[in-house]
Figure 1 (cartoon, rainbow, N blue to C red):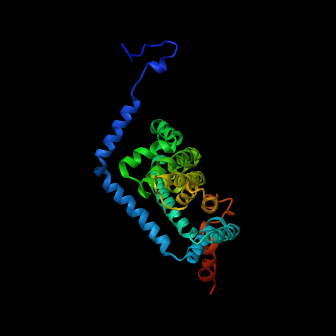
Figure 2 (figure 1 turned 90 degrees about the horizontal axis):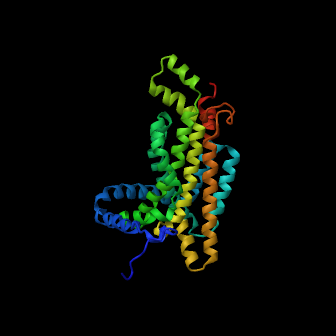
Figure 3 (figure 1 turned 45 degrees about the horizontal axis):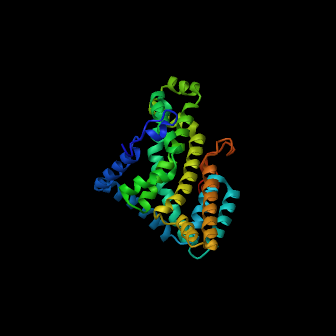
Length: 314
């Protein structure tokens, strides 16, 4: 019969068609038909993103710089605060629109990271406590980390449509794995003798979790948070292909027009934002030994205020 394929034992791949593309088209059609069912989630995500973005955009740039510098000082020390102040000043002077675009990107990254932490931290804790749950979760996380980002852009766009909400969802899928993995690792590496001692002194399971295990696992958990933030920022740039606003969209549009100047400005803005976020989150993850065995409120601007107004002898 004309057109009928004969099976070739030496090259079976051309002889067998499992019609995976056809099934995938079926999933796409299902997603289009059930788009209305996920509208409540879309409204929630959209409200969160717009709320954060309005807050960032409404704050005057110099006030925002001061807030971020104070956070950097508290989290990572005075040198990092000076570094962050210089970096943000350069970011603001890159172009008249650079600061506004950076705040939009920062709002999307912030929304993505908040949702990653809210979902990923409990999953990581459960995975750290249960070998069976971690065995189930591991292949899912492997898939989330290894599947190319462009592959799941399409089904998310089919379900949600283009825009910032789709960008946040694909960012969560891409960036949530590190915080789950490192939270699980941090819980598992807590010294069992310390946990046993807490149990022997009558601590309840919740007290052991919140006063022993999570504080001891904090440096590892914050390392996962740092990776999640960096992956979120990289994914926000990729997600500009589905009309996610911000610096990534500026780079994409400049590349389309072969406008090297604006592309470099957008790229520099992303690099500076990444460096600032990286330095702050690395500072948050410092151990007590790195802080000179002091609590967080004993240093930085909070420590300064405490020493000036509260600890001053009468």
